[in-house]
Amino acid sequence: MTDETTKPNLTLETLTAQALGRIDKETRSLVPPLYPSTTYERDPDGGYSSGRGYTRPHNPTYDEPEELLATLEGGSDCLLFASGMAAANAVFQSLLPGDHVVASRVMYWALRTWLVDFALSWGLDVEFVDTTDLGALTAAMRPGKTKLVWLDTPANPTWDIADIAAAAEIAHAAHARLAVDSTAASPVLTRPLELGADLVVHSASKYLNGHSDVLAGAVVCANTDAYWQRIRAWRRDAGAVLGPFEAWLLLRGMRTLFVRVQRCCENALTIARHFDGHPQILKVLYPGLPNHPGHAIATRQMTGGFGGMLSIRLKGGEAAAVATAAKVAVFKRATSLGGVESLIEHRASIEGASTPVPLDLLRLSIGLETPRDLISDLDQALEYAATISHDKAAEATPNSVTGEAKIHPDEDATGKIRDLLEDRIRPILIARGGDLLFQRFTDGIVTLQIVGSPGASVPIKRNIHNMISHYIPDVVGIQLVTTTKDTDHTSRNDLSDPVAGMQQLLDEQINPAVRGHDGYIRLIDVKDNIAYIQFEGRCQGCAMSEVTLRQGVEVMAKEWDPRIVGIVDVTVHGDGTDPYFKTRKE
Ligand SMILES: Cc1ncc(COP(=O)(O)O)c(C=O)c1O
Image (tube, rainbow, N blue to C red):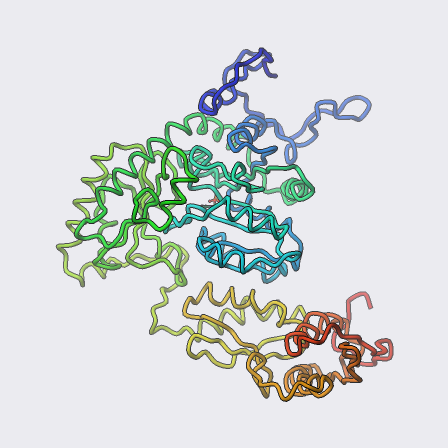
């Protein structure tokens, strides 16, 4: 369908404006056609000489936008998805249970919410770190275990900047891949693959489309390796594919990408400078301002501007923020970003109860209007917010779209922890052959009691912590205890005798929990730093005993006594008469 006349070496701006500049061979149409057909004719011999059989893997309307985006990012291949969330999900779902992932602590909120949930049920070991701190990122890497580092930069809504080139070096040194959610930058400002990233992810609903009328996502890869093939297979088989009309609209939107992003950057910088130091404003968060903590890195890794996104924090707190948003007339009060029109959003109330976003923060997505109109609109709204009484402003507290009640420090965090445990955590633990019961919440630490197999809960302790602290930011840690002693804080007796040490661990921590399943783990011996154990009672024939052993007892034993290198199970499992957990097959 394309015209193959030779082209000079064109710039990305030109290729984008012309949507790759191809002419449809049959009709001479300048605009690539839209293919709504879901199915394609087979050859008489049963083959598919067109290379297409069905729309889910092969809709031709994807071809131009995917190729254009791969070109813009300097990548080998691109896949469009039904949304930015679907694109990001495909990257995580193509990992395997047990893989370790290091992700930016500040990232798109809905993605983080999904990730804590998914990690818990899928068994991904996700560690959130401050990825602007390269020391923290390096410390989090576990060579051989860490498979993916996920950055979101500039990160919503503080516009934190992570150093992509440095993060790529750190990830690669541990043989992990680096994926960058580059939605806020767009390829106009940052090309993560050129800085060493392996994957770039976009919510194409934002700058790429740019007109607030398409939901779409994309992943671009540096190499079409086996991991990329899994991502491709995931899109095809899980079916989170873009509709052809959306793909067509996306390409139309992308043709103006460069001028839109450049104008958004100019406008945002003008607005950020105007409001920096404004008497009602505590802080303007914009990477283009020298006072932003990420300014130096942004200057290096963003070309041609610092993006169209900024946030302002108001001295008058939440009430002033809400009143300001209520009073604007040119800015539209709406979520999302990257469109032609400017948006204002009280971010904390859309993220809901557990948001870590300061309540005094307003997020601004700067569009293509003249900065003068936007500045005078915000100026008058700030002036209004400063004059109204505090009480009146407080009345304007918005409702969260998530429908969750806002958690204030005096509200019942304990009740919320119990609810999370019941609804989201315990069903997973029970399916894994164990359980955790709530004991207490004091000084930011949630104490949970292990019941049944420690292998059900101990290996996923970090994910349980992630989920609880995601929803209840007051939670700084969790500890797992047995009926008698705290797992995390039990003091070890003299460790010079490894047999006595292992016996203490079994007596004080493991067997009190295993007793919940009417089982018992007997220590037979410790020889050459290997502990020999035997399952008794209902653990003897239990289908989960291997999980208990490898993910619970062995992990705990090695932590307890670092000399222990492994555990050997000498149980004759076939003799177990009343197994606690039987597989369905049996
Ligand atoms: C940085 C970022 N990543 C991903 C997404 C998810 O994209 P979508 O809404 O297209 O699913 C968003 C949406 O706001 C986003 O801002």
